[in-house]
Amino acid sequence: MTTRKLVVVTAGLSRPSSTRLLADRLAAATMEQLQGAEVDVHVIEVRDLAAAIANHLVTGFPGPALREALDAVTGADGLIAVTPVFTASYSGLFKSFFDLIDNTALVGKPVLVAATGGTARHSLVLEHALRPLFAYLRAVVVPTAVYAASEDWGSDGDPHTEHLPGRIARAGQELAALMAGRPAAVTAKDGYEDMVPFAQQLADLRVD
Figure 1 (cartoon, rainbow, N blue to C red):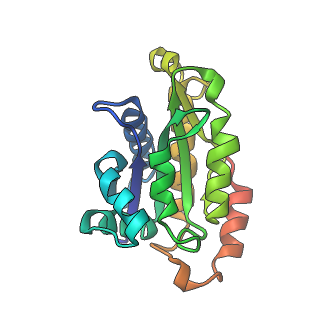
Figure 2: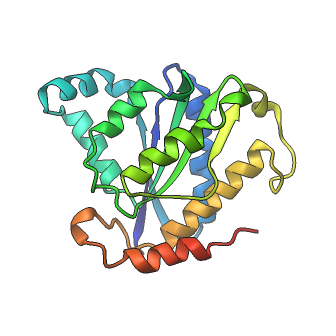
């Protein structure tokens, strides 16, 4: 059985953080939809790599822990990226981490983007900041992006509604569908031959 590698990048600054909580729930929803497949989940807490990221930006050399994290992201079959909202955009630490990834390393990789903030007014960060970032990296972002404001955490309800649990379930289903139909750990050096059918699969994706 092929092992699928799911990597979760979470840029919350506190412990515990709502950003990590959202990341964990998205990972659980994705794994639930990948039942029958062997899944290796790797969580990257960007806050733990802050000093290494700054050092790499000025020296060009990553430390061992940062190198391991970057390799995990580029070798993933699916990626979940979650950031808190700072000044109406992703956090500087989140952006600095992805600045270290080569712009061909995520070609065709399924990515689920999500963000947390104190108010629903910042939800458009998903569309004006996160989607363009991963479009530049030529990843394939799933249709449903998830934003969680403070008030959303008390919103339970039917998983097929637009409450937070429903959005999480739908996003996890979309990411799992793309991961299940994608050759394991395709990297940029493998070329673009798989991109046409993969793009068609995304266009045909239907989630009930």
